[in-house]
Image 1: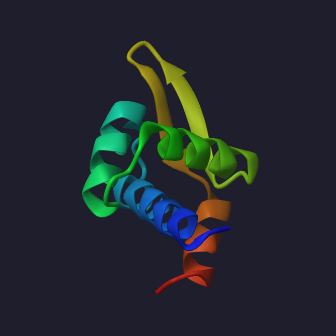
Image 2: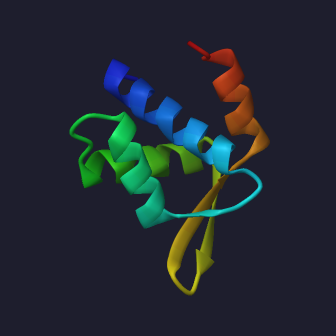
Length: 84
């Protein structure tokens, strides 16, 4: 994992943790993340979402407005282990 991927992952999981127990619409999450991560591209966002889902750090939920996300216990543990 590169330092940029680490930065994106940490910002993503922190944003979802701050929104807990609610689910966050993907577009809103990406907009929020862009404030914390300079020059965040849609490709980087999509790649990190996919990686976090594969690692079971986040859970995606299909809703009428699109995919929404929430943090899982594993994601909270990752944040605790990688707090800066």
